[in-house]
Amino acid sequence: MAGGVVATGGGGTHHEGKITLFVIVTCIVAAMGGLLFDYDLGIIGGMTSMDQFLLKFFPNVYIQMKDQSGVHHHSQYYKFDNPLLTLFTSSLYLAALVASFFASSITRIMGRKISMFIGGIFFLVGSLLDAFAINVAMLIIGRLLLGFGVGFCNQSVPLYLSEMAPPKIRGALNIGFQLMITIEILIANLINYKLAKIKNGWRFSLGIGAVPAIILCLGAIFLDDTPNSMIERGKQEKARKMLQRIRGIDDVDEEFQKLVNASEEAKKVDNAWKNIIEAKYRPQLVFCSLIPFFQQFTGINVIMFYAPVLFQTLGFGSNASLMSAVITGGVNVVATIISIFSVDKFGRRILFLEGGIQMLLCQIAVGAMIAKEFGVSGVGSFNKGEVNLLLFFICAYVASFAWSWGPLGWLVPSEICSLEIRSAGQAINVSVNMLFTFIIGQVFLMMLCHLKFGLFFFFGGFVVIMTIFIAFFLPETKNVPIEEMNSVWRSHWFWARFIPQDMVNSHAHLQDL
Figure 1 (cartoon, rainbow, N blue to C red):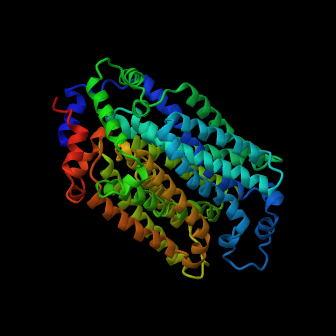
Figure 2 (spheres, helix red, strand yellow):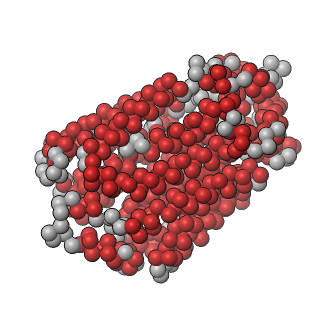
Figure 3 (tube, helix red, strand yellow):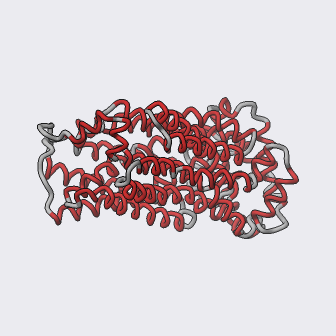
């Protein structure tokens, strides 16, 4: 039973060992993969408002932006409605979607480390191509390569972190990936702001993406692979030494044997893809598909889009987008740090449920305030007090996302799959995430035009659904060794019917020895 495991895991049989500096350094370097992903999101947001960049590649958008005379009041919603510009931004997500399927096999056959290295190389080349771009084609090819890099890193980094970390701090180390992302968005925004004024500043903005890519490539050369991955590829002695090193103790027999057993089980599987659709893996398939889907439908994009517009009404003028980036970015970083300290202590469910309720209340408040002031016509204005209240709700919303669906959307899918389906589960997670990031990116501005304040209620509806879903169907996974996750499903009121008893036994029959 899961309960017993947690007790022994906590120190009864010492199969967890110490939390070693080696593990923490390894995980920090690997989490650089997180920098790549959203450094890009941060940079592209700012790029699309850099005059020089738009003039060179998307002159039509530039003309639309500058030509405000006689334009319909909602021009701020319509100004980026340019298919080529949308293709430029979104091509990355489609490339990541495609790459995650190839990355899945490479991660399994050649190891997590190689997959991280390949991701770093793609990102490095893509950044340089974009930085030196002379036409739109070169720009889009660079974006596609960046997308391949993101696909490989999002496939391998969360798995690497979940497998390296001791169960009692697995959540915290895995959220390190998300923390890197939030810090990087903040840095990207500051860099954009500084470079927007410099001639050809956009080239530096795009080129700086090469820095985390180089760190990740070097890291991947010097890091060791995870014990799980070594065993999976038949390097048992090396894996035992690695396990001793990351646990900081010599006696790792019990945990090592569990990893070997998990690997033996995995070898019986011909095809992880065929396997994950079997009934006994139903909970993993459901969560690896629905969690990334819900993560995109929390409405975080709407809030992030609205923030700069709000700051303009506050009268920050040209500094509006910087202020917005720094305030929301700062809240993001602080809230992610809070989740690092609470995820292994209070558990995943509490964060999901609290975050969901807080997001919903904030969405209703923001939607209602905008509806009252601007109505359907979109004309109106806020006074100082209302703006401050609105700002409070937006920050509270960003915080609740950053300690719930933001990091847990990556953590939970990476820790619930047993070894035989782990790479397939992670590929589904990444590709669903990228697909819906792409879809929302494509239709978001159009929805904003038509639904206006209703967009907050639209996403609020999804938040209600996802919070109820988590409350009923997600068991608590904190402190449970990944190899013993099946016993958690087996003891759940709903999922038990899918999990045959022998699955729990085969994964855990060593515990009684």
